[in-house]
Image (cartoon, rainbow, N blue to C red):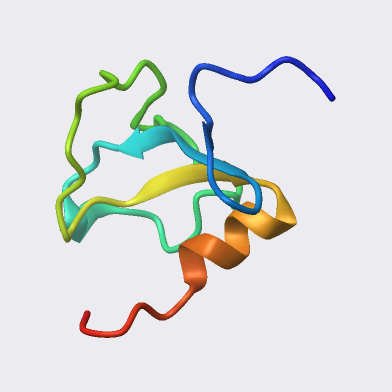
Length: 80
């Protein structure tokens, strides 16, 4: 198994973690971060996110996950 990335956390079934935070104003965000930027448009991704940063409801992030880690992220938790 490869060495654990400091950005990924181990869960019961896999690994997942936030790699980058989209710092663009929500009204100015591109619909798809994977799309080609328009001429003159600069990506507004913060790749060195502080490990203690707490995500907010309007935050848009780039994540990495194993299949099991993604399943954990998408799991429905009773009472939420």
